[in-house]
Length: 233
Image (tube, rainbow, N blue to C red):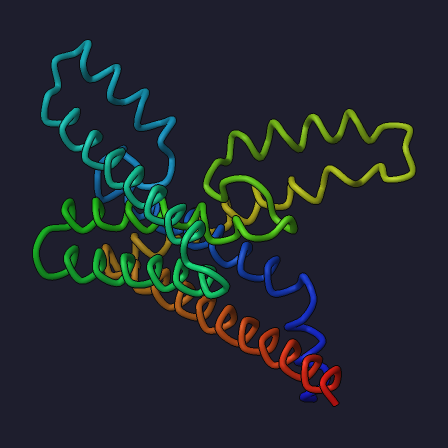
C-alpha cells in the first residue's frame, strides 16, 4: 500500500487531482457568489468586466463599485500567487494552496459573521490565486478559472488532432470545463440549501488539495534524499 501511494505521489496524478479539485471549488464558489451578489462573480472576470461596462452606461455606480472591488481582489490574488510561484522556491506550490485555502476560509468567516458582500470580495482573492496553483507543472497549463480560454484551446486542439494518431488529445484540456460546470451545479444546490454557508464545502475541498500537495512534496523530497544517499554510498 505504501509503495502504491509513493508511486501515485511521484506521478503526474496529484497535479491532475488538485487541478480537478480547484476547478470544482472555483465553479462552486462562483455559483454561490452569483446568487449572493445578485449576478456578479468571483471567478468570471470577463463577465464582471461586461457588467461594469454596462453598469457605467446605465449609471449604476454601486454595481460598478462592487464589481471593481471583485476585479481588484481577483487581480491581487493572481499577482500574489504569481509572486509566491516565482520566489517561493521548491515549496511554492504548497504555499500557494495554503494561501488559497486561507483566503477562502477568511472570506467564508467574513461572509458569515460580518457581510456576505465583503466576504465574497475576500473569496475573489482566493480564486485569483488558484490560477497560480499549478504554474510549476506542464501537466495542466493556463489559468484554471479561464473557462473561455479552456474552450478555445480545446477547440483548436480538436481541429489540430484531426487525422493524427492522437484524435482525442483535445480532451486533455476540454475535461476542465465540465468539472467547473459540475462545481457550479453543486454550488447552486449548496447556496439553495445552506446559503453562504455553502462556502464551507469549498474550504474543505481546498484543504484536502493542500494536504495532497503537502504529501506529494514530502514524497518527492524523500525520493531525492534517498537517491542522494544511494549515490553517496
